[in-house]
Image (tube, rainbow, N blue to C red):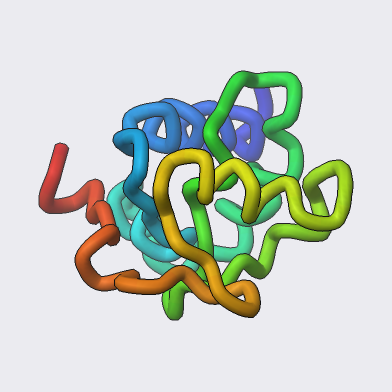
Length: 108
């Protein structure tokens, strides 16, 4: 297993722990894994997670914006998945982001 694959698997392990109705950021996962400057790599992991049963829709950018939505099938699937968990999204922005934010460094 390459270092990237190993890192991706560690990202998926953390992402699977994000509670229903909560969200986190690429950077928060990277920081938790001791790779604070690797937020983009966490994004790549999410882009490649479709076969891994990972709730990638719960991972957004640090401002609560659905930057990864174009990697989901259909135009609004990421938003629809979040809304099905009672997360309000307006113009690709999670509402009440601070209260819904799940920080793995504090929660795990």
